[in-house]
Length: 400
Ligand code: GLA
Image 1 (spheres, rainbow, N blue to C red):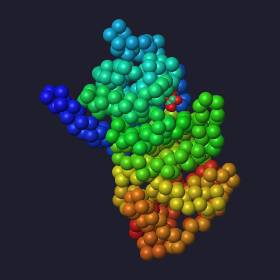
Image 2: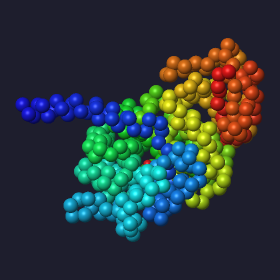
Image 3: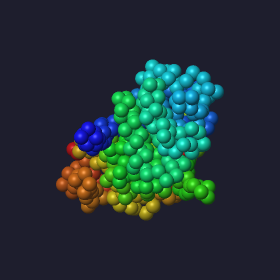
Image 4: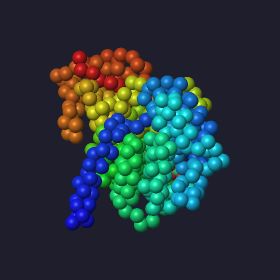
């Protein structure tokens, strides 16, 4: 009898666990992660420097909060099986680092993998999920990314559910990021397990193109954007599609960085910066900390944008916002400048997913340019603009 009561309790608990998990990250998580810039060279000095920068350079004020350590922080397990940080890279230990980051009003994230080894070959969580989750919670960790290398024959739903349950029983509200690269369509099962799930292979600082490493690939911004088009309906508050961490400031042109950032915001993507926050140009910072654009990403309605029309090499994207506003982003996929002409009055935008539409023939919206922060007229006049190559025009539409 006891056995049956236990099974019944488990069955009742699982959906409740899912609901609890999705109360976290009600808007897409915002922060920084060590991988894109520092890869295996991450250490506590770097993490502290990133926290110092984020807390004081305007990023915290714009909504960034997580400082996330990616792969290569681990050493071996101790005799009792507890995971240890590499003492050469993290001599003060992760708990002290979490205390430091928390004292700045920020949060600390860490990384593991479903296999025995991470992608970088370091000790990972397979068979130690509950022990690791407990350790992270004791350290004061607030965010966990779990990778999918060396998964062997693991069932992804089972593997990520195990870690989800392990995180939940710690009682600490740790945000859970599934890094499964879209291999098993995590958008179909990730809600209720994690707060976001990677949808593609790793990003690289390239606007258009794929870097082929034979047994794995890195994708450019446009390739990743295109992969999001069929899956927008699976994202929402607490469970987001994750088109990977940002490459803003890592080598693309300013136009490309601006377009990349704008599109991640149109996609309601997690905004996890991946550059050296302590040594970035004012241009890079002005992209990452643009509150008008960030507000599009963080809009509480939590509906991803969609491509509505094309105009030469330009794609016109729309995103419905909670207060009845819309964001519009004209993305020039080409390398050459492209003139666009959009006669609002003969256009109608309708989104079956959010059941929202905009009838520009009967309703006038005023326009704000989110990159220049200037008033850009209203929808009574056709929009005529030249969009530079690999750049955007991004507007917020507000009903008059
Ligand atoms: C995978 C992930 C990356 C990064 C590396 C670390 O490639 O997709 O985001 O975490 O592993 O090894």
